[in-house]
Length: 214
Image (cartoon, rainbow, N blue to C red; front, side):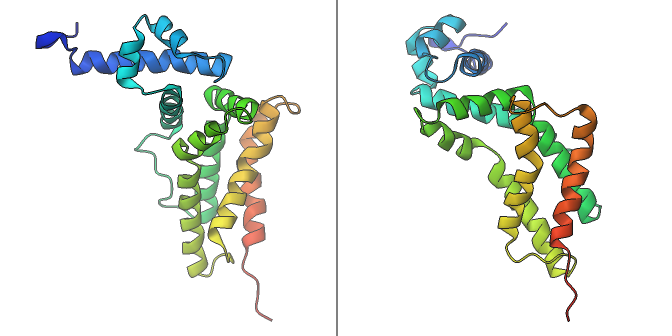
């Protein structure tokens, strides 16, 4: 059982547990009811805390949503011990990254979060900004662009704008499978999803192959 410090202040462990409970409740409410329909009162009632206790941790609903998005993204990241770019040729590395990215993009929380942003970004434009700030897209683009720049220096690929190419690669990996998972078309089968990263990488690298000098 968590200990209470002198003066009635909760221990660090108890505070962290309460913070996790608030985020659990907020995640469920945001993803099931949307941003607009979720109130601080509802979150506080779900956790059985006062609004004063809530505001001690989060200044407003936008900050709470940012914390929810951050935690979702962190949970979708591969474990720290997973090698992302080491010890393989470019095709193998890109296929590995594409598989991890696709798996994260098609997780239930990622799909629900994407639906929320699409449905409510017109009323709450700050939601897309939160996702951009807290998300890992820019990190993935930087990682892939770095790989392409390295391979270009070695003469293995022909890429003039590595950041642009990395953005297109991510779009190729995610866009169609995610749209179909959201109901915009027939969801892809497990067999199709298993083959998708390799097909995307082959098409992408075919466009980046070095050109023979005339």
